[in-house]
Structures are given as structure tokens and as C-alpha cells.
Length: 251
Image (tube, rainbow, N blue to C red; front, side, top):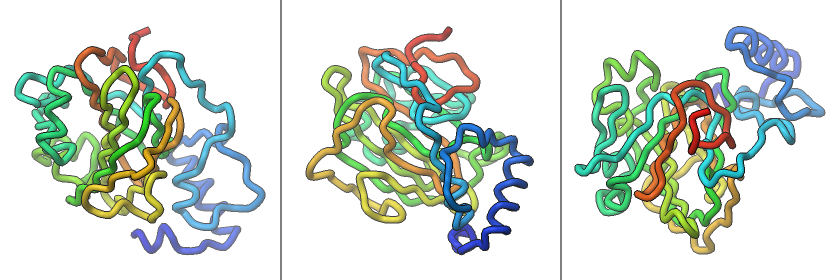
């Protein structure tokens, strides 16, 4: 499937596929950046950028990293676990390190699910410096209601990438991109590669970020999980959200 998504498409075929996909999944093409030529591959269409000004970045200190639906949020409990739809996940397993996860105990988490219709680029939720990227290999189960019901420990079984952003006033913030079925490739701005290789990647010159700056792309999929340290509580209601919207208020 990865080879098919990256295969060159004739202009007529590209236009037809983009049109059919947009109708089936109700994609809003009015917010997509203009192009002088058709998409060269399906992956180019799936990872399409938005036009300038399509999103407004909140002045609040923590914003949504992605378009999609807030599916779960709450505290990281004293045992270092988060609860997503009644299922417990250990934060250390999610981000690939118990030591790194310790600083999030007592903090908050939030899960954004990206459906096939959504814009699939991920953006920084805070101002800060991207200092570490961790590639965590795994499976590619579907990250939807079926997968959540039938695959135990889904988020910590799937392939994922954890990015750690150090901030001036909020401590460290983690953004975990969880891959899903079919292609499951994740690329990030800080690493010059089609996909993040397994293991820790220390960014020698940490990448300076402002809220809303692009940090990664899902090449099919999936879910973004945000973790923050104690001292700030994420308070967004469940339901639709766009990247750049505040995560600190419920109205």
C-alpha cells in the first residue's frame, strides 16, 4: 500500500481519485492550498497543506496539535497511567521511556483522533524547542472505534513517534503521533528522512517552535496524544477540534 500511495499518477487519474475521495469522506477542499498542477501521488493529496490563514492560532499557551476529534482527556494518575475510553495506558510505554514519563505524573493528557477526512499534518501545541524525537516500532492496527474495542493496549502496540518540546514556563511537553493501518509512515520536520527511524534522535540544534508551527505528518493515520507536566490542566471538551484552538477552555 505504501508503494501504491507513492506511485506517480497521471493528471486525470489524480484528479479523479482526489474528487472521489473528497466526496466519500466529505473533505473540505476550499481550505486546501492552491496548486498549479495535480497531485503527483495519492500521498501528496493525503498530506495536502492548507491555504495560508485557514487556521487561527489561539493566544493561549497550549493549543491543539491537530485537526480531528478530541476523544479523551484527563489526568495522568499517580501510577503514571492515562485512561482512554475506559482502558488504562502506561505513559512510559506510550512514549517509550519510564524515566521520561515520570515528569508527566500528575499532569494531563489529551487524545485527538484524525479521521480520513481530516488534514493530516501535526503542529506544535506550545512555544518551545524540539530537543528529542523517538521512533517506536510496532504494529499497524486500525485506530478507530473497532480497534479501540478489540485490540488491547492499542496505542502502545502500534508504531509511533514521540516528540519532546522543552518550553520556557511549562516544562516538557510530549506529542505522540500514533500510526495506523495501511501505510503507517510518520515523517517529522526535525529529521530529514521519509520516516522516523527507530530509536532516540537528539536534535543537536533544538528546533525553535512557535504554537502552530508544523512538526510532523501522518502518511495515512491516525491519532495524536498530548502530555503536559503538572501545573497546567488541559480542559477542552470532547468533540471536533482544529489545530491551533485552545486546549485550556471548554467554550
